[in-house]
Length: 252
Ligand code: ATP
Image (cartoon, rainbow, N blue to C red; front, side, top):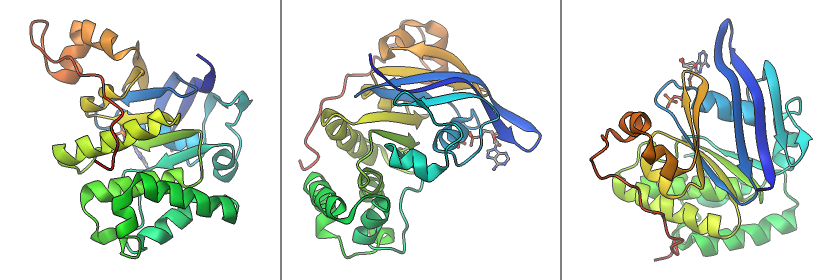
């Protein structure tokens, strides 16, 4: 595996409260990594720290072989990191304007080509390109969030709970969209509570109380009785093996 992103001993917090304690995670080139953790585990805090939206207090963040922990957010984005927050889009702006904003640091000609590619990937967004993002369905809004994050042509898309607020049907749609992006070579780091996303994952880390407890494959997490109970609510004899996701065409 060629290293794309790595954190070593990452620490941060808010005021006097320390939230992350010596966090080590890795994402390889073209790899999808799922960061599983319950409410308050520190997932959002870790994502913000990776993007420089929250300063780190210790440890190191490496991206494409460079130590980026002291760079401002803009410089990290320009090096190929993109972030999709839980909200993901600006509801008062149109679909077009949201995608435009996602390409803020990209040369105009490249941004236009990229927008056309994204509308091919998400035709439903093309139909609604002049509508306000707030009027889209939950699933379409997430697709727009993904398209906006991809508009800057990132190497790695860091996503904070893409399933938040979505019905199971829309979760499946979002997983299909991400599988299509992944098939195109994009690397993904997905923070989630929803184990359905393990379908996409090459590897998974679990975050508990700001510490990494487990790092391995989705099959390995299934093989550990304690972790299976914690994350799947299933005991040894229960079925619950997540299927490996297929790279479906999101237009279907
Ligand atoms: P959730 O799924 O609920 O978003 P999470 O795993 O993303 O959970 P974080 O949002 O990173 O968790 O929160 C980790 C801890 O940091 C929690 O104890 C939370 O209360 C605290 N925290 C988060 N944001 C802030 C903030 N801006 N100021 C102070 N404490 C915060």
